[in-house]
Every structure is written in structure tokens, then in C-alpha cells.
Amino acid sequence: GKLRAKKQSKKYNEEISSDSEAESPAMSKKRQATGEIEFDETPQEKKLRLAKLYLEQLKEEEEKRAEDESFETDQIAGRLQEEVLEQKGKLQRLIAKDLLPPDASEIRVLRGHKLPITCLVITPDDRCVFSAAKDCSIIKWDIESGKKLHTIHGGRKGTEDRHVGHTAHILCMAISSDGKYLATGDMNKLIMIWEAETCKHLYKFTGHKGPVSGLSFRKGSHDLYSASHDRSVKVWNVDENAYVETLFGHQDAITGLDSLSRERCVTAGGRDGTVRVWKIAEESQLFYGHICSIDCVQLINEEHMITGADDGSVSLWSVNKKKPLGTVKQAHGCHGDSGLEQPHWVASVAALHNSDTVASGSHNSKVNVWKCGQHYRGLQLLFSVPVSGFINSLRFSSSGQFLVAGVGQEHRLGRWWRLKEAKNGIYIIPLKRKPSNAEEARQTE
Image (tube, rainbow, N blue to C red; front, side, top):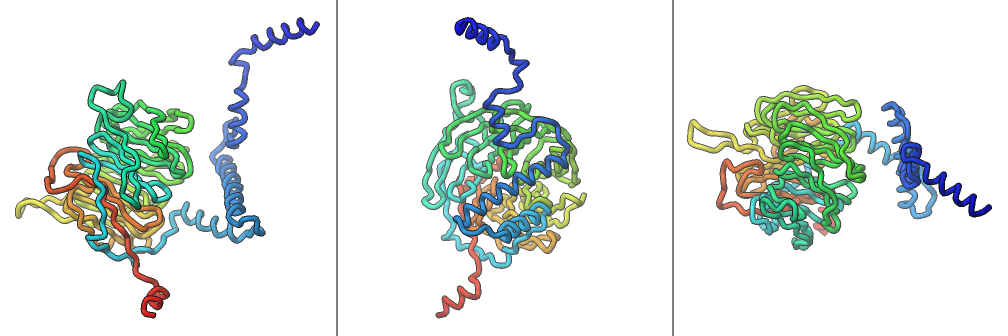
């Protein structure tokens, strides 16, 4: 009887098809763990669910931080208030007034790439920098010591099948907000995903029909946005190694992309003269007109951004206004013979998130650090830092203690000029602050 029962159960087990099985136990557990809802939900329901999850997460974080002391509600209230201001784009830390220009001797140069640096990112803990270049290599640097921690060498053209890594110029890179994943995009239309800690290769994303020119992880998630010269924006889920969707709208090659914690990203459309805000959930876009090629874009907060263009202008934008809130024309001066002057192209911009401090880079041997006016109306030059070469990438550390510049002899997107006197390297620029009244009193004592 036992044998018969065993055979019958085996028979029934074999007859269960993959169609009738709703999902594997592992997937079911994963859904329970992530709180994923198995039915379609409205955007409002999704916002409510995510808010509840976020409150629980905040509570856990604060309980750990309090180290078994009585849980104080004002801690959460303070955090939530700051988060609300950040989400609304109203959190503006006034840092610029205290910044001092660094001495030339304080600027450190890290050299390791053979060809111009095209892009870089700083890890969330501010300890390491990843840089990439036209030599197809990626280097992980320790900021404090200036030493190379890891090098992913580039391969020769035609060795794509057997080489782990890039075999074409790398144009962009991004790191997830938890420091787990690194993404890099190249001229071969490929996106590579790496484990940031070990530099181990994980996945390769294909699908773009042109060079990948912009990458950004959505803050607090492993959703990756990518932009390409094929004029499209793609959304990927790196955890699942999956493609999600493609968005169209730009009329020319996209030259830059950025995102923060909202389910949206911003892009610079090059010669189509527009900056676009893509609302992923609503599947809609807003665009803002310009009169030249916009080559770089960075979000300052959820509501404001900064762009740089090939007419030499640096502009501040609000996502609610069709025109810039403030523009500095010929922000890096002009070059050329008298009467035939051309402005220095703005090749890179950077923003210290939720602050009034931004920076821009060109090829006039200077990095400009700017102060944003009240309500982000207008830009005021604070100081310039001498850096020779094309400043192809700029990043502020999350602490605001330093600025990192990726410099090369050529522009990251082409070879219009070559500055032979420049060095291909990473420049670490300290951001000094004026001493506070208490520190000044201590120093006088």
C-alpha cells in the first residue's frame, strides 16, 4: 500500500506543469521579503506602500543607532522632515559662503591611464574613486593613499569574445548608492556591470544601437538608467539582470544623464538643444529648450539641475520652468584669434547634492566653482582651480570635503583638439572651509 501511494504521489508530482505552478517557493519568499505586490496597483497605492516600507526602515535604522536606548520620535521626525524637503527640492545647505580656494600644492594628481580620462565616480563612503578612459581600462583608486587598488585592463578591438572587459572607449560610469554595483558604458554599445568591491565582472547588457553615453543608478535602488547616441533611454534591473523598458523622445544623440531618488531621470540631448525630465512611472517627459548643444547635466536636488553647453554657457534649471533660472555665458572665457574668438566648451558639470555649490570644467586650464543664488536664481563665481587639460568629468564627494576631476588631452566624445601639455590623470582638489568662530577663538588662544 505504501509503495502504491508513493507511485501515485510521484505520478501527480510529474504531472504538475510549469504553467499551473504560480511561482517557485524561492520567488515567493523573495516577494514576501521585498514586500512586492502580486497584482497591479495604482501609483497612489504604490506610494502609500513604499512610504510604509520606508517608515519601517527608518525606524529600524534609528533603533540601531540609539543602541537599545528608549526610542525617540523626534529623531524620526527630524529625518522625515529633511527627507520631505529633499524630495521637494527645498533642502539647500548653504556651504558656498564658507569655501576657500585650495593652494596649488594641495592638489594631488593620480596617474595610471595611458589615454584621456572620460568619466569617474566616487564610492558612497568617499574612500575610493573609479576612473575609466579611452584606453578601455578601469582603475579603482584609494583616495587617502593615492594607490591603485584594482585595474581592469582594456582589450584590443576584435577580442570581444575572449576578453572580460571593454574593447572600446568607455564614455560613462555609475555606482549604486549602496556601493554594491558599478556600471560602465562604451562606444561598442555595451553596458558592463561589475561588483564594486572586488571588480568582478557580473553581467553584460546589450540593446542600445549606438554608443552608451550616460549611466545613473536610481538612489536607494538597483534600477539603472542608460542613455545612448541612438537617442533612447533604457531602464534595467541590475539585481535581476533584466531589461525593463525603452523611452524615446530626443531628436539627437544623448550626451549626458543623471538621476536621484525619484522614479525619474534627466538627460541632455546634445544638438537637439533640449534637457528632458523622464517620469518613468507615468511614462511621460518634460523638455526644456536651449539654443546649442547641451553636453552635460547634473541634478542638484530633485527640483533643480545644472547643464553645460558647447557655446560656453552654464545654466541652472528648475524642473517646473521651460527656461533656465540663470545662465552664465562664456563661463570659461574664449580662445582663438581676435575677431574669431570661440567660447571654451563646457565639458563637465558637478553638483554637491542639496547644497548651493556647483562646479564646471572646460579646456581653459581651470575648474570653476560656483555659488547658486537664492532659490537657484543666478550663479556667482567663487574661485577657479588651475587644472590643465580637458576636464571631462567632475564629482563632489558626498561629504563635500573634496572635488575630483578626470582630465585628459582630448575631449571625452571626440578628438577636435589635443592639448599636449596636459596630463591624463585624476585630480583630487580639497575643498577648504573658513574656520568657525569657535575654531578661530581656539586658534587665537
